Image 1 (tube, rainbow, N blue to C red):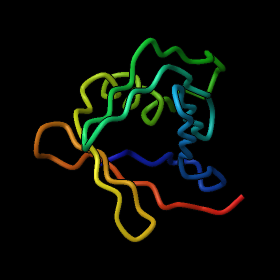
Image 2 (cartoon, rainbow, N blue to C red):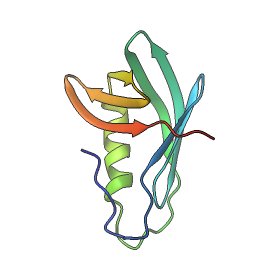
Image 3 (cartoon, rainbow, N blue to C red):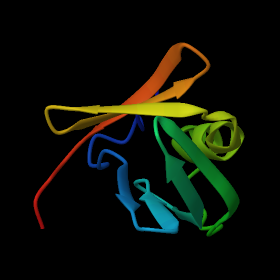
Length: 98
């Protein structure tokens, strides 16, 4: 499960998926990288993050940096993107309109 920030003013993480790239924003930093999607496989690669000081609360940022490269598949259903490492769902994102 994606850890949430302990800061009560923090925002939930947001992920933007392009044709070949992605951006994840947390309540403190931004992660960007390359993306490949085919069938039910999704691969995040060559990613990097900004390094803003977050008051010692980097759990969400650390979680993404440690797990993005391990994500192996996805499911999209009813406006929700589910991300998996093997058969374990590790997080989900609800689609929001621009």
